[in-house]
Length: 372
Image (cartoon, rainbow, N blue to C red):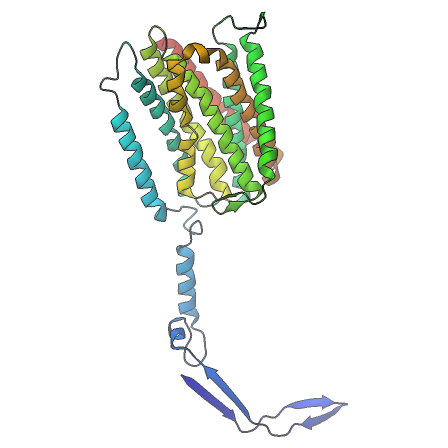
């Protein structure tokens, strides 16, 4: 549709050297072309914009944008619901088809070791669930999330070190010299810290590293944290495999697996506290939390089959995981937290999460000692 507007005369008054001058009459032919498709975009035929329609459309777009919902920070899973349903269905099928015929036996089998390790691993996803319903938080809550996750990791590091030092004497020697569990734990801690530092330097060298829509240093940090949590799960899987060996292994292994399942819930929360504030999609957060614990059943089976070859490395593995988590907590999460919040608030958040995790660990130790 074309609209022609003609003016018979255009006059403009300008001041030149203090005198006014009138321009000669001029004809102006203005052609306005409108596409029929514009009729639904909030614009009337007279060229005016319908602000009501435009606001409605803008609000509609914002409502459909992930993470932009204004409903008090709550955001439903939305388009990820199909992916969640698929993953949960797969986990349910794996659980059903790998379940032993009898869970209470005197002599455990490889199937028992796998199944209990698998149950312990998937409980990690429970810890990530609460944060999946929140949109991206403010800078303050980003700092608080880092501090809380750091407190959980420091608590886990302390527990791993004390567990490694307290292992039963095994008479391990190197070149004729006895190597105690304490020495092996310290060596593992140092190796873990060196490993994380080297991995961080290597990953940060790739500026084009991407994890979904996240790139650069943030992607490198997420990759580093997930790697550390996965390494930590290797040490826990080693503990499950060893627990199923020996006299009364079926009962002890099942109970240790149940204890780790409870312990994995706050660890899943720690993973989510790191990923969700950095903009990682909700489905990916849930999947990464579970994947970080999958080494537990995977490593538990070979440890159970070849326990004599693995048991000497248990204290080293525990120390390695502790050192890696200690480095990430201190030099990554705490360093980020103090940039977003005051040091007193950071210390308070970290202390509360540390004490909370230590209380859970102490309760599990008391229950384990009572059962044994």
